[in-house]
Amino acid sequence: MPLRLIRAANASTAPPAATGKVARRSCAFVNNMPDGAFDATERQFLGLLEAGVGSEEIEVRRYAVSGVPRGEKTAATIADQYSPVIEIRRNPPDLLIVTGSNPLEANIEDEPYWDELVELLSWARGNVRSMLLSCLSAHAALDYFDGLKRVHLESKCTGVFSQRVDTSHPLARGIEPEILLPHSRWSTVEQDDLVSAGFAIVIESPDIGWSVATRESEGSSMVLVQGHPEYDPSSLVREYRRDAGRYVRHERDDLPCLPLHCVAPEDWEQLEQLHRSIVDGRRDPVLVESYPFEEVGNRAPWTWRTMAQRLYANWLLPATEAPD
Image (cartoon, rainbow, N blue to C red; front, side, top):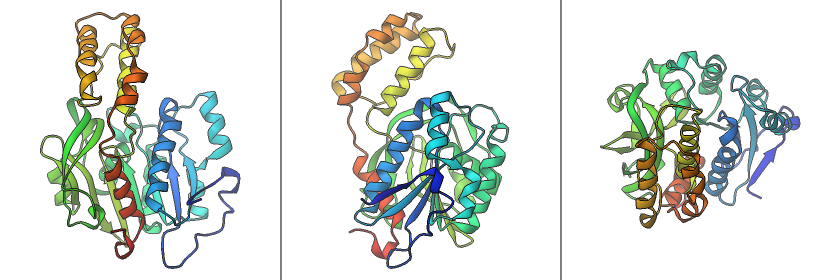
């Protein structure tokens, strides 16, 4: 099987990655997502990793930071299948993936896992061939390495958006010049600041800014992903269901944001009507409970799947061996 998971108990004693024609054979996966999205995030990222590696085998070792609050069930999963982040140093991987996380603080430096995260990123820059950092982790790297501060958006950037691709870049080999890609975030780092810091913008949108950027530094590459190519077609629908449910149950008072283009065209009007009812003041849990979220999510289009698989394939393999 191309993807081989190394259990936590063996993480520090697993053999080093094999060398040969393909230089990258091991990957550390750091899952920072909260409990509600923890399992889905692992499935989504490792699914792309498995699709991207093709017929080659890659060892994956899973890690978690200690600063993210955990419930009993997820804590048990982490204890059984994951290792503490500090253990990565005992057997340095060829590749590193660090997921995003739900922001808890206005200032990113105040996040409870900040010290642990930046210590990992600082070590990885000199010891890992390439790291792929998603969303909040990408913003953390820009803050720590380049002093580039994230900017809080007036409204949440959520939905599936049209993107332009720099097809001349090796990361974009085989990707169409115009694609669709999901975003779900409250913050951004200005694109002009990334360019000034030496980053190449691989995928970007004139409406919502950059999605994928990369830079070589000290013999290591850093790929920053502000969008969510790992999402499955129902991810945005599930996020809206979660946020709308919390609002109508008075668990939170900020209005839910309706993700754009997150469902099949025939389902949009009904979803928009539900949203208008909620925004107009009907905080009735029955509204959300009676809406067919599962059916609608199952019909949602997956327009970015091929693009996402190609992006990971290009990241995993040296440019000379990337698939045609």
